[in-house]
Every structure is written in C-alpha cells, then in structure tokens.
View 1 (cartoon, rainbow, N blue to C red):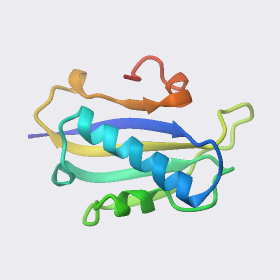
View 2 (view 1 turned 30 degrees about the vertical axis):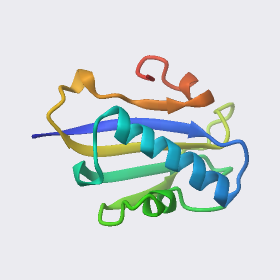
View 3 (view 1 turned 120 degrees about the vertical axis):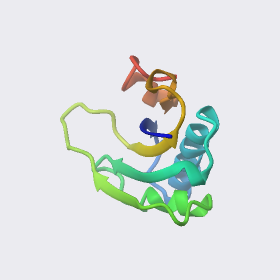
View 4 (view 1 turned 90 degrees about the vertical axis):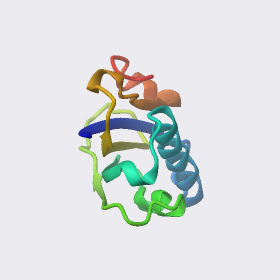
Length: 120
C-alpha cells in the first residue's frame, strides 16, 4: 500500500459556518467517493482557508462526517491580491494501491478554475 496525496478545493458563496460545513463536507465526500476511499484510508488532512473565511474551522466539517480519528489541521492561505475569494483547499494524505496518475483530485464548482491541469 502506497502513501498518496489528494488535492481539492471549493469556493464558498458566503462566510457562514453552516455553509462551510455543507461545502467542505461535499468536497471531502467527493474526494472519498472518486478515489474509492473510506475514513480508514486517510492518514491526515491539511485544510487551508483564504483570509476572508473566519466563521468556522474547515476541519469541523470532517468531524461531522465521522472522520474523528484522523489528524486534521487548518491553516490560513496566503493573502494574494487578485486570488479567488472564500476558498477552502484540502491536501489529504491517504493509503492507496492506485497509481499516482489515477488519483482523482477534486475541485468543486468555481474552484475548478484553480487547477485546470488536475481538476476532475
């Protein structure tokens, strides 16, 4: 079993805790489903949020999905002028037999414009 990394992102419509839970939950669910993963396959997850998001921790959405025994950490994204606002990014470390080229990176909605090279 190899250690792999999965990327993903979602842009929120507004900075509200319930909306963040919903959108980050949808992102994590899509990452798990598209890569045939369960919570047991997760090693750790890094979340970053743009500086304009402060209603909640993105990791809280993972806990609400039942991802309770996986190390999670949140950090603030760089404040770059002209960057897409209200974005939560994910970097999940996983155990998988999939070759690196078959890992599905998930960019939902408008966040697909962030990484057109790997967004699926």
